Image (cartoon, rainbow, N blue to C red; front, side):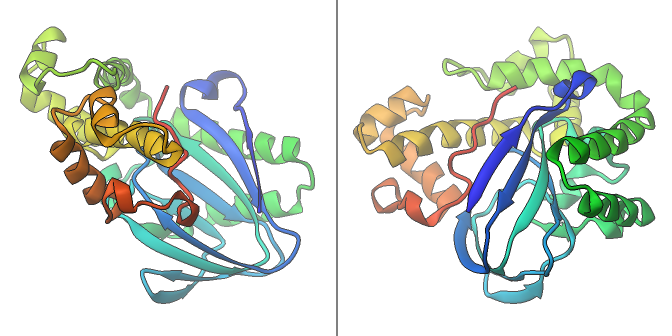
Length: 271
């Protein structure tokens, strides 16, 4: 499977981490285990058929347009077919600016995007399918996203605040509790929890755990460091704490982990 990423243009660079394409020349069987990345994605099937999917053993027909919410619990994903997928990957806290629905309702779900966006999603999928160049597809998706963004101006005012807090939580040397973080920004810890959940679908504590986990899984996959060294480098209090979190997000201990069976471990939280 070929995978490529493309940078957004102009104003959307603050909201979209990247656009991406996954494609194969023939029908293939793809088997992956999906882990927490902190990102929300929309994926458009632009192939000539609709690949079949098994998600945790349940057979479904892949929707033409999928909304992948925040993945917290790991799940297995098996797909068979010829793939031409075009996707949008939002930053952890920016997808909420494009939806009216509470973003946390999408957690641990793969949803038919047409059920949310209706005729707009149907029209956009049709135009993306007709477009033959990646530049034209990016032009179409950015026009759609900018229109959606223009309808959520009330969310702009707190976006910079959430971005700053998220940056703090993502630092290697972050060991503060939520009360001290809230105090730094002149807000209550309750308000901090609320706006963070509203924008990312995650609590600040869970986001921080996912950020540490994403860093640790790179190091575990590299197999160049001891578990004690990885725990220390990723900001865990001790090795047992690291192993507990790793097992929560992957279903296996670091020593049992096999990156060859996983698709999303390489995605890194950043802004």
